[in-house]
Image (cartoon, rainbow, N blue to C red):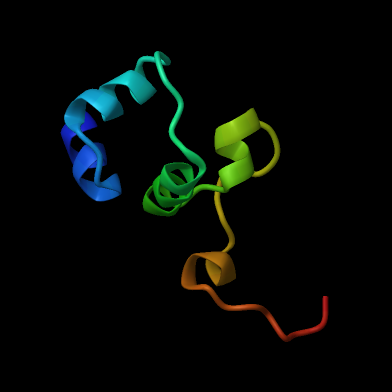
Length: 68
């Protein structure tokens, strides 16, 4: 997992390992990339609260135009 994460987010395997083990936190830019790669909401990575998964429209970068 660590090697794939490092490659996907373009960091060293050591940096990815530190994130996984809670020894370091990713920068904002890397956190955004990590959230996209995992398909989760950025706020969920920060706080572990709320919905974990992003909506389909968010994943594709689209905004829904249909009424709620």
